[in-house]
Length: 424
Image (cartoon, rainbow, N blue to C red; front, side, top):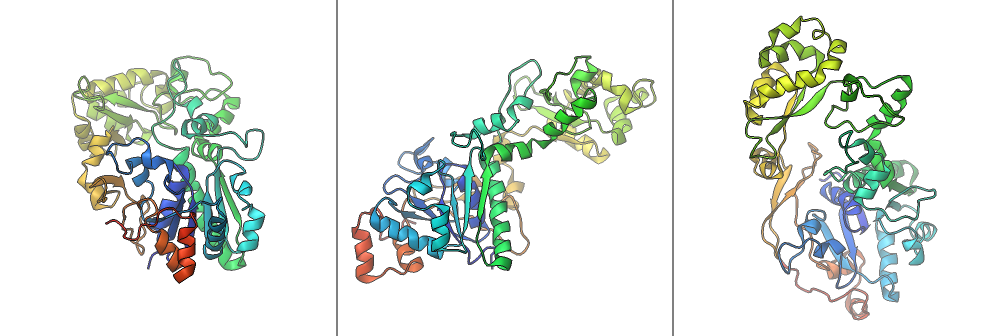
């Protein structure tokens, strides 16, 4: 039995933030019914296409384990079908522009009347306030949530991160909210509205920078490089390059081969507890007792010198050799892994973190698997659906349409061209 087996999810999401959420629910066993525009589908099906005539990786990697139904909700029969889907489902998830569902005639109040037990989950760019109607994309969320202003180097512009903390990060937050609401419904019998704003989610992930904003009132941030360099702090949390986000000094350092390999680097942290081991490894044993080096506060104005010396050592080793040498000493280091290196790591396939998936249009591709492992609810990653692949199946098996009634629905123009034989 899967953790969410028996839960039906009406998936009105598109692009990345919402599909991230509903894919997790599907991996945990929910029956996720993805509603798509007839003949068009989710916009990402045809974005960043690498195999002509096939759904893009952008789509396939965000929509595993789901069923697809084509539905024109502006059509009267389409509205009838949507109403029945709302009656049958436990959760409705959407990331439309603000007010879109209301304009379709399916406000939260109306949805509650149709199904008082349903949980309606929404992703928006901003929460209630002056920006609530603004359109938001991944990088906009990173900028509005405090990530970009604190990412990059002090003498450079704000930077966005390669991790999709705005879209996928918000999807993860919403998923937690949905599961929590389902748990509460077991006690109350009532559904409720769940919302996650992209700005809020990014800020939650950037909370250590909000911590530092408040610490500025008490004086300079001593673990930041600029303190040791004698550079005054301003009124806002500064960009700190590759400094550690915690209280332990850390930097990204060059390793052997950095001249040719853009990822021949390691992250190296000098915790107080392993300082003496660091000194021995890099060949500076006198630093263990030398005045100005022996204690953490004394080292703060010498971090550039210290890391330059450590880098002299790391440049004689590959990033993996650095790990092999440092790990037995409990020195925290980590290689900068490229996506190529990650995709070739068989250990990640063994744990299900990466999976190989067969697809009828594009052949085999690599995707991330479920990042959360449950000991009693295994996840088997199934390919994403073709557009409208399960329309007839959902109409008949979920909604109970049959015979002439099913023919009426199919002939109404509300559900696109029915694929009587699903592709395999």
